[in-house]
Image (tube, rainbow, N blue to C red; front, side, top):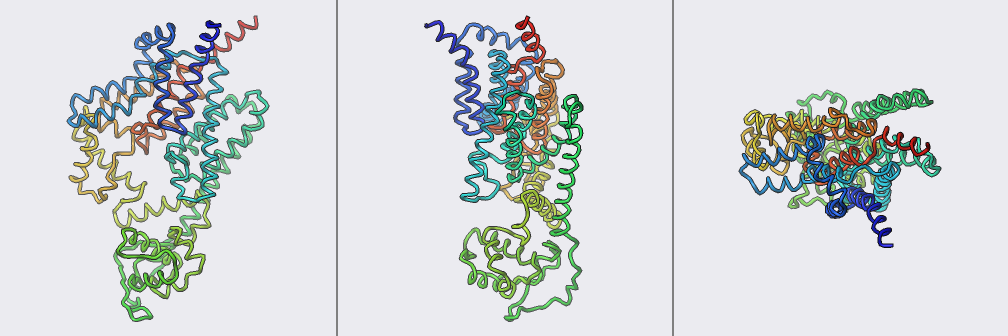
Length: 528
């Protein structure tokens, strides 16, 4: 009896612990951290795993994967901010621990590994469903629609879930056959309303990469006809949506003879006509026919959401009101406010800066914000508060730092201080609260560790292909493709969820998922 219990424990310990980690990745940072200690305990609890734990440090692949952590550790030798350096090392600890522990855990049975991946997709679906219900019951800004998760990070989890569902589409379970298409459709819908630009980019690239990855599978089935039609439809819809927003909201401004502009409102107050700032909405200039002292009282008489100029939020509300009036071609004074309908008042109270936005779908809303940020940056040169154009400033600043420390960087712990100092040297227009790091993992690595660190990082990413140690190439390609795209506009490895997303799935797909050919050979032997 005792032996059976012990055998059952050793049989289920890794699936249970890894399942907890996958749940934690989606729902709980605390569970994500605690489950990694459980994994260490599970490895140390049996002789075979303890032996493999020591063997892990002799594996070229494991050593290649943990090399990026090692070079971050080495970067402490030339850093001055030791406190931040140790914090960064602690944050990146999964990149050291998980490859070693997953190697020691060894491959699971094929069905068990597949069920764990499907369990992960179920967790992603569950959080998506709960977040969607919460969103419709108590609408918040789309950026915060996912409960307890960054919308950017969660968009990556959705894309990986879709890859997993497609990859195992040939499973014979009846429940899976009937649910796979609705599940993928729901996840695509949730990704659509999430308005994550990173998610959109990854999805579009995946749409064109999947036919290459699964060419052998597709060419033998009806998908070889359906997939090109889907790709064409998606491309057409995306381009149509883009052009619709571009032509409706950002046409060439209507020619205006500034010398003939009225000097006063109908109430006798003087207009402001800023003919230097050429910001526009729907082809109308924002800062002509503007009388803020007259516009605010008129708004306060019509809306329950008053504008109090002593309030810190007043500038944002005035800006939204000004832009909305401009989008309708109205003057920014009491007369313009009085021409607003009740629907317009409600739209402005909800934060819409253009009267067309409430009727836009999530994709076109995101394209609108994308184009507005570019328009504002081109007109003012100020990227503050705009996620896209701020990245231009981050990348320029990162490049300046790299020029000063090209070989080994500024050190693991000094990256934040280096950015702060460089923003001042460059006289950046970015406001202090928006002066962040590079939002590009390749640049972040190079800033901290120089081109030496970048080479180690690239080698670490390429190692599984160089050593030919990938059990399932197609699934791994899908995962690494998503991960690499996320590195281009995010510091993915600077957050707990981002680091663990990479370390967990990279280690799982290399060490826990059994070798496809080996599994088929074992099955053949069992049948004989």
